[in-house]
Length: 129
Image 1 (cartoon, helix red, strand yellow):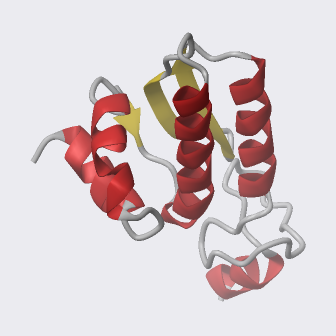
Image 2 (cartoon, rainbow, N blue to C red):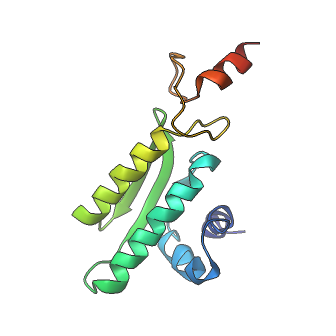
Image 3 (cartoon, rainbow, N blue to C red):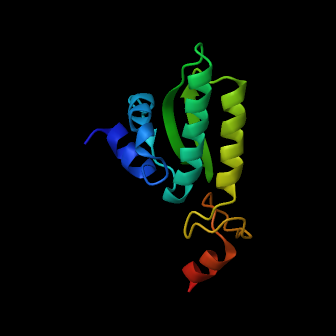
């Protein structure tokens, strides 16, 4: 299975089938896709914003180069990004920073673990036991 098909399988739970060809095309040359599984709904919303922008502005063409976790935060690298998409990416990065990468809880207090993994206090206590 090709990498872009694996990406579609991760995002397909959050996007309807009308996005399949778009995702397969835009992620065709994606070097790395390794974000937390709990971030997929946020990334799916980002894909919707990308498609919306491209559908209404003919001169806009995006190409996803890499999506990963770096230092505990979402990193979404796109060729051809404009101010609109950079704003959408910044919002997605902020949303993902509030999601526990262990349990998927949202906006719970994060534990100070000294590591780059963003986990909530509850998951940090469970891990120490």
